[in-house]
Image (cartoon, rainbow, N blue to C red; front, side, top):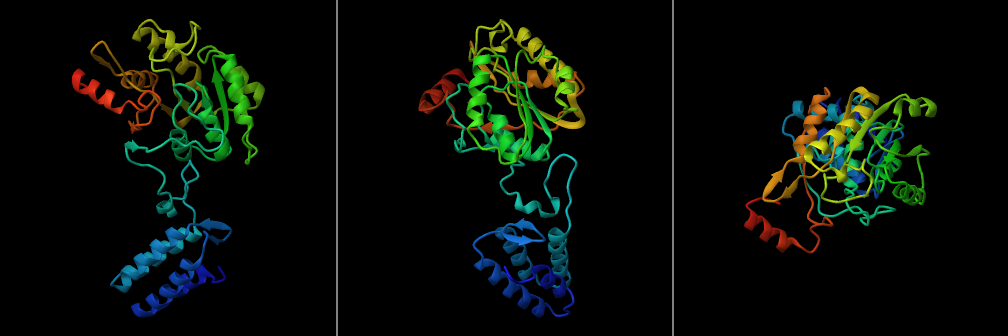
Length: 332
């Protein structure tokens, strides 16, 4: 785009007549609409939709005072950055992040199967979850810990977003498979991914971090087994082999005790878990594990409910699950 957009916006503030301002912005809007790609301003890419939306709002105003307010806001969004301490979002251009979910109910239509992502590993979560969380709660080049590596969904997203990550996996076989799969996707940001085999409650993280030159983690994401719904291994340390809910929570608490001390102060941790329905009773695993965090001094910021119909467990069984819900007196 040849037009110096910043100069046009700045000069428009000198006009004293509303029609003069709208004339300038009408011309500017037509030029932007001709563009087939995002607009580069001061070496920063700005989305075409964002610019068109802001300019249309300026064109729809009826007073010069309100018009100039919107112009100044647009100018500020293009020339100044307003960042938080926990992510790379420019809050002066918050409207650009329309793909970031801020509601507490996440309705997701389908799984992201791009690149090396796959749904073949029983019990893995959909990639959109770590993608959303990493973009909200981390900056590029920061360190993320995933104590339940599994198929590596979090590490794949971390690599794509330019975050370093450490994944811990109890099963050596699963760890090796995951490392191989992730290595097949290009590391565009040249970040570090590290893989640890062992029990997340027992690995000496303090020693490992010191040897690896990692000071601490800026985000931790926990996706443990949903108690005994899926048996992941025969290992006694595996949370899915817990004989009781008390044993499950004790083991999970051990993971927290080993991991949370290495999370920076005022940074975030997330736990992703589903509840269990068994013998006519709903077992609120989500609430139980949240309490384990609270017992350790963490502050609860949000509870998110995710609705995703095409899970492995529900696939092609919607009518069956509907019948079960009606017959059992619960909701799915």
